Length: 135
Image (cartoon, rainbow, N blue to C red):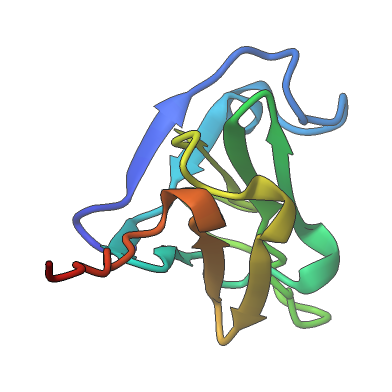
């Protein structure tokens, strides 16, 4: 984890299974996110190391974008964990989307532990050049 990654406690009612240790159940990792905005929209990069596609959920509801994921940390057979600060990190992050963005056209790509979300600006919200007539 980088120095920008944060571990926070969250309510027990979240995603934890009953057999998980109580302390581990309350840990959630806030992944570092980079956001770049241009005239076409917003691109968001989230660091989600160890997260496979099937353990990643990206959703939009009422103008809020939510990213939830669980890392899969493979344990070789016959080995025992001596120390683990977080056994199976649960990542979660939420953002409010501007009404200028088109949430119906979000594109998502997960590659090498980095999630890239491309959120285009609505056509009517994009900057446009106004023609000027002379005379």
